[in-house]
Amino acid sequence: MKRTIILLTALATMIISTPTFAASTATTNLTVSASVAQVCTISAVNIAFAAYDPIVTNLVAPKDANGSVTVKCTKGASGLTIDLSKGTNGASAPANGTTTTRTMKDGVTTNYLDYELYSDAPGGTVWNNGFVIANPGKTGTAYAVYGRIPGGQDAAVSTTGYTDTVVATINY
Image 1 (cartoon, rainbow, N blue to C red):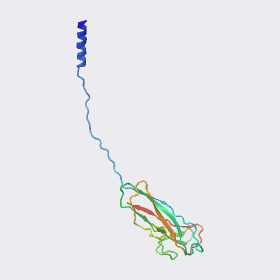
Image 2 (spheres, one colour):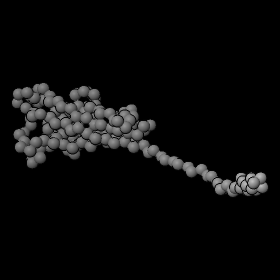
Image 3 (tube, rainbow, N blue to C red):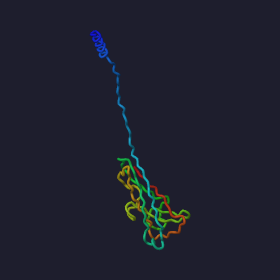
């Protein structure tokens, strides 16, 4: 029995002391990268003037209405300006003798109604090109656009309404 125990002990010692082989490994680095572009978007809330009354209400008084442009930009975007065009009808010489730079046109005839857009308040600073803004970030900022139709225009009746399209551009 002693012999069996010694044999089993010797056998167990051989099993335990048998060398084990570990798996080999190698490593490397995986580089992950991305770039973030300077990007901005611009959207608008239209300006809808109520009815213009050249005989009573707006014989002298102007007609005001507001809209806005909203700008969103990548964090860190710089050199931002907003331009508002003169509109599709332009106004090198205002149609009704006012001092505006923009004109709405009747859709059917060649009747015109002068108006202007301002950056600070109706009758304030005319909004053309180069309105400088700070970075509004990804949540965006709405910038008010104040519209004014000067009083005293000899405007004709329009069944289709007077319209103009102004292009708002964000430069970045």
